[in-house]
Image 1 (cartoon, rainbow, N blue to C red):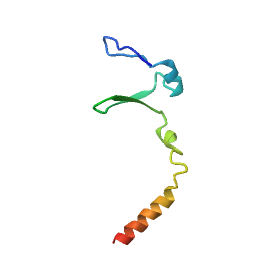
Image 2 (image 1 turned 60 degrees about the horizontal axis):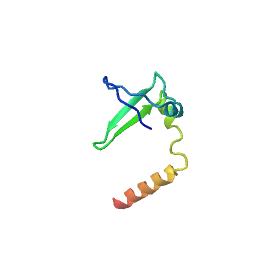
Image 3 (image 1 turned 180 degrees about the horizontal axis):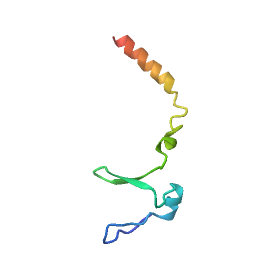
Image 4 (image 1 turned 90 degrees about the vertical axis):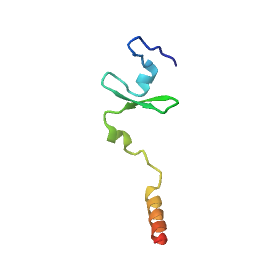
Length: 75
């Protein structure tokens, strides 16, 4: 997808992306300059809600216990 930039530095977010990521007039966007590219990330209104369940299935307790055992053995 391509969009043009106006003289004032404005551009249009394609409707397909607006619908997919629930971007509307109240959405904030985070612009990240990697030095090679620019990434635009929509910030959800409920940040904590968006993160809820993100690590599901990662077996974080097992990882934590293994790290603690490793640290204990290093001492």
